[in-house]
Every structure is written in structure tokens, then in C-alpha cells.
Length: 385
Image 1: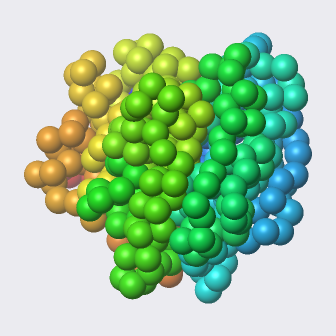
Image 2: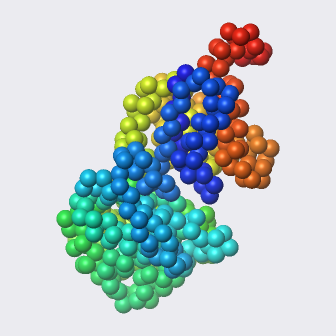
Image 3: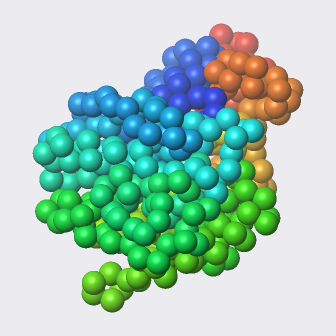
């Protein structure tokens, strides 16, 4: 049996590479005759650069940038040919902010601009930047400041300062990217403002209270009014993905970036379609399989491609928060909760890799045709298998 393992990272615990390895090792412990192929995935969020670099054999360039709280953090980006791959979460990811310090009114995306400048220094002609999993909600103002944007107030201290802004000049950053193909790979298609905008949709998971969400919405609305529209009169604020990464999508589009779905970009780079065609079973997964997973995320993208090739797709997630009716409609044949199998969330978090491997071994008992065949040949297959 050929098994394709293509998971996302398990937020806060395991990278996509680590989760793929844990699933593979757990599966092989109960089905050693099965062939496992590990292809870690990303939708543009945390792990984007690592997944791309592994798939392409790209060069990793190490640097350091300003983190979301203003301190220096290590970061890296990938260079392959004339293209650089940058991950916003490395500069302003939610994982860089301790839970007790999360406040999107004060966090900055300044480090993302530094990453982009470092990529430009490599002489590339194209930059693909993955957006997702950030701690910021500053509409990319900090990033713009790092790239040379000027204003009559602070851009790099978070949206709390936006009310004082009356003028913003994007001339310098626009010239920086005049001859560069800038591509934004997002895991969501939300606009900048409104009920589905950056603040209302993602502010709470970044630590914002209901009152703060309303202030964030007002701050981003004022920022948008101050920046204005593109020279051609178009308004990126309403574009798909403008609200990604706390509005970083919007700021990048103001510099001329085009948006692509992150998961589709990664699937194309890793050659997922060919791998699924060769597989008998596909396993994907993430930390929490919820309603957001059903659109634009790794799980939904992998499941849809598997369904298109008539291959069963199974999800292993830290927690499963959607019902069978909802997930089967997306092409998922079955979903298993690692925390349920481990006996609870605390138990699974105590040893994330071990718990995921144990869950994979448990799932192999049901799904591994090779193991059932071997047991029948030895006369040891349990009832029901």
C-alpha cells in the first residue's frame, strides 16, 4: 500500500516536517510493509519557507529582523533561481508572542519589510510571500515603514497610533518593487474591512477583546482612508486576501502585488497531483480541524485534490471541531482527533510527536490494506478487519 502523508504544521507544537515524520513512523509501527511518502505542506502560514525549500532544494538565507514586540528575532527566506520565498510569520508570527502579551493594537509587521529588503538584496526578480499565522493587525503599516514609507505619524508601533495619521507616502516602497514580480500567497480570502475583515475575523485569536476589535476596525478604516487608492483608482481593501495576516495582504497589494491561494501554490511546487495519483491513501492534518479548515487551508486543498483523483483522504488533527457531514462534503473520508485518542488535550500536548504517532498507528489498524492482508496470511487478523 502506498501512503502519501501531506500535513500542515500542528500550531504551537509540531512543524509540518515533524508532523509528517510522526505520522509516518506511527503508521509504519503497525504496517511496516506499507510505503510512506512524506510531503509536508503549508498554505502560506508558519512553515511556508521550510516546505518550499525542502521541495525545491532551495538555498536558505539566514538573517535577523524586528519581531512583533520590537525585539530582534532570527528569520530565514529561501532563494531558488531568480525567485525568493518569504514567510511573514517568521517576522511577526503569533508564536513569537507569549499568550499573556498578545495585543494586536501594539504589535508591528516591521520585520516583514526587513525580510523583503533582504530578499531584494539577493537580486531576485520575483518574490513570493506567504501570509498567515501572524500576531499583527496593522494593515502592513510596519512593513511599509521598513520599506521606506513616510507619514506624519508612527507607522511601526501598531494600529493604536493610526488615528493621528493624516498623510502617508508610499513612493519609496513602490519604486523598490517597480521591477519585481511581487506575489502574495494567502490562506484566506477575507477583505481588509467589514464583518469578514481582518479585525473582526482574526483579531480575537490574536488576543483582542470585543472592545479592541472595534478599535482595530476603526484604526484600519482610518489607515485605509489615509493611504487612498492605487494610482489606477482600484481599491485593494476589497480584494480577496486583503485581510490576510492582519491586513498585510492589503499593504502588499498597494505596492502592486498579485494574490494567489497559498495552498494551490504549495501543491503545485511539491507536485502533489502526481504524488496523489501514485498513492492508495492520502493522510493530511493540522492542529485544529475546524470550519476555517474547510476553505483555503492545507486540509481542504489536499482533500479536494484527492477527491478529484478518487483517492480516499484521512485527516489526523489535534482536535476535530467539524461534523462528519461537513467534512465529507470536502472530500475527507474520515477525521480522527489525536487528543481523543490520547485521552485528552493535556495528554496529547505532553508529547505531541508521540501522541500523533500513536494516533497514526491506531488509524493504520483501520486503513492499512497491507497490514490486514499480512494478518490474513498469518491467520492472525482480528474480527472485523
